[in-house]
Length: 302
Length: 281
Image (tube, rainbow over all chains, first blue to last red; front, side, top):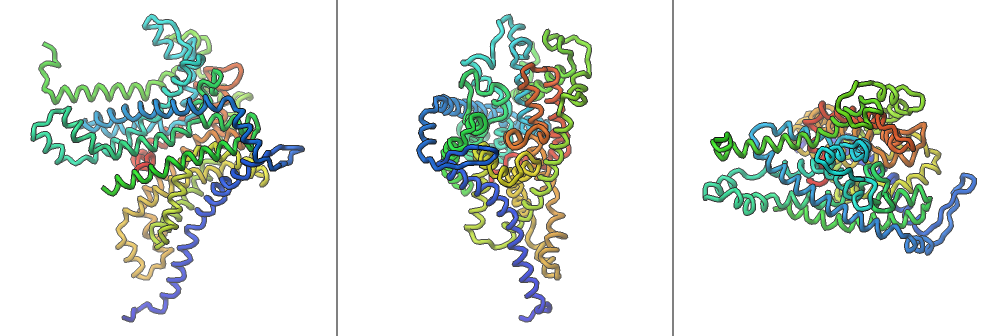
């Protein structure tokens, strides 16, 4: 079993090993320094009070103070409530609309590529531009939505300025922004449906309704679950649009978790308390992520 | 009597499909059109909500050229940050993806690495902006474009690694083995044989990384001040000023969207997979 290049194998092996190690190293370094270290630092910050005097940071160990701030934070209740309403209503609407679109477009014989291109647009536009565009469209005096109402002979509505509508308006923008994302996931699933199974059901005399309920939807269930779970977790990230549209107002009526973190960290300068909230947020996301991964793995194996 | 009645069920369904498609088109494109129209209006035409008006370029001129506007400085900052961070993301991400794909790393290394990238991708970024702020202050990097570049590398790296891994997986292993048997050493096999095969992946990861960096707002808002502000921060300022200038706001939004649209046109056939990455894989 002597190979012609036997003498060189040692060098090749060595190069191979070193390439193997340094090829992963930069990425590990990036994640260690820019994500793992800050998260460890969050734990330290969460039990401290950090103040700036003469441009220098002064850390004091005050483990209970941040918990006191947490209990005294009257905005936190509404923020958690708003965030849950936002996630449930926005994501449910997005999944239903995304599914409807995916099924409709999937049934077309032409225009699929065009539709997919179109759907990429909202995902790639700067969220700040989306917020700023919709802020203009929601404008009380000349905005598009009140123009529509006036054509219909109805009085103008304060979309962003009333406590009852502000969160709903933010949800509307989020739906516009993210239905395409759900659509892309479900459209891929619809395109991947086994044609023979659908054809067999049709030949056996299944009506359109039966076909949808008994065959198509069960087959799409894995993709639906994935889209729902991941969009729900990602919805907690929402910041840019709500920062621009309402700034969380009026009062705290449209304040979401990420915006609240921003206010605690950078408007109230409570780095310690902000860190405590961040630790809870990260724990919550991970607690959702583990079963989500398990779900997707289980589906993937089938 | 109507055309609808005469049509077969299949063509009625097709017509319904086309109508839905038309509606979706209006809903997606409508806001851009409305804003584009508003961006060519004088303040008085915007406030009166009229559809007949004399178009003007004043809003664009004001956004791009006025001394009070930081838009062009923002474009310079955004271009620098997006270009440098995208280059780094591609180099670091491609190497990591190749390493995980090609070399027999222990299971815990691969799963740990990919699990971490997924978790980090899902965590609201504002939880980390606080510690980043402190760290960059200590390093003297607060209010520099370097701080934005580093953070943007970290937020776009997960997407690049996943995307590149899926492209590496599609390469038949025989191709690389053939190169190695022919005496190519692993590094040059990677460089000359494997990399040219994943150019579509590099384009997709590059386009997405660039666009996401260009769009990123919450980090730029908090880690840099006016001189180093990126485009989204400048756009937000138009909307936040006490005296909101609606025309400029519309023009700035349209201008900020252009790079994403241009890249989408060039890269769209590569990027669909990358957009839904992490949720499907």
